[in-house]
Length: 114
Image (cartoon, rainbow, N blue to C red; front, side, top):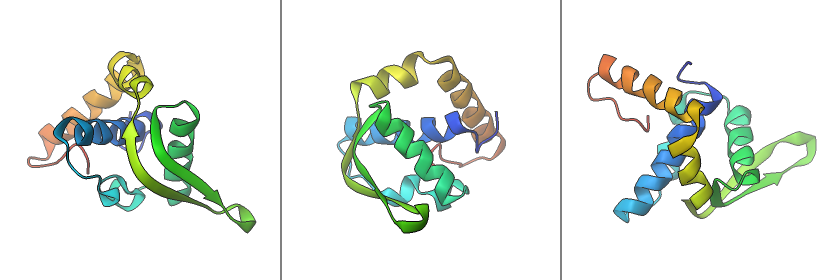
């Protein structure tokens, strides 16, 4: 699994939202932006859209424009119970966690939310 794998992207977003909830910290959209993750915006938007469809997160909407362009709008996003269960129980989430842990060990000081 690569750092730009679908499940790795999902894991990073959901873990960030979970951490914000648990710590009571303010959501920063730049922390989980497509630029920060180094992936195309369309790919990132599709991942967000899928997480909304599966009810893993709430507080976001997808605006669709002529030509198919999509924009994510945030409104107090948070992880849902389904999202917490997904990152805790899904085998692909366990693989994503392992990839990010290995990457962090390789590059000291690297944040899981890069």
